[in-house]
Amino acid sequence: MDVFRAAERLMAMDDTAWRRHANPWSGWTRMLTALPALCLAIWSRVWLGWWAAIPVALALGWIWLNPRAFAEPERFSGWMSKGVLGERIFLEHRKDIAAHHVRAGHALTLASLPGAALMVWGLWALWWEGAVFGMVLTALPKVWFVDRMVWVFEDWRRSGREVPGVRDDEL
Image 1 (spheres, rainbow, N blue to C red):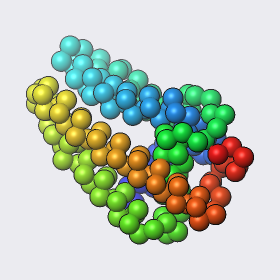
Image 2: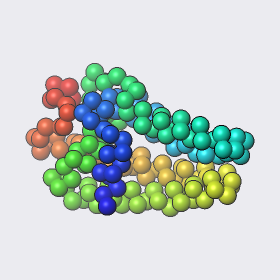
Image 3: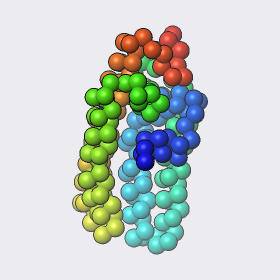
Image 4: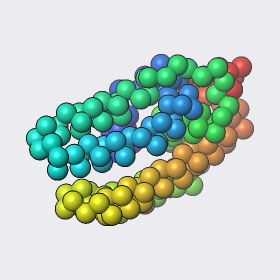
């Protein structure tokens, strides 16, 4: 199973969504709010009981809506924009990029799993320290992943290939 493709399909990312998600506001707000909002929503079961399903649904809705919520950037030259576009290249052209990028992408995704497990355990057991530390340990490899995707983007451009969904004069 290709977890990257499954996530892309689940998010229903088309050209317009990718372009809008390349807005640094989209990338940064997603990185800084999505996981904390979901964790807080799950934790809210302590106060809300089954009504916590509402904040969980809202958090999941934000995760889906975020790539669509911001306007396309005027330029796609910022670090976060390149990271998002590099991720698109990684997803759509994995066979055409350097093997070390593919290995790094997989390794960084796997590196987030221990943190995710700790976060889930903390949320389940209502151990806030575990939930918060796990969330941080989950997020750090994601930041590193985005940085690697900037490298993918830069290598792709240096090879003279077109970036999917973006004209050269927008870069």
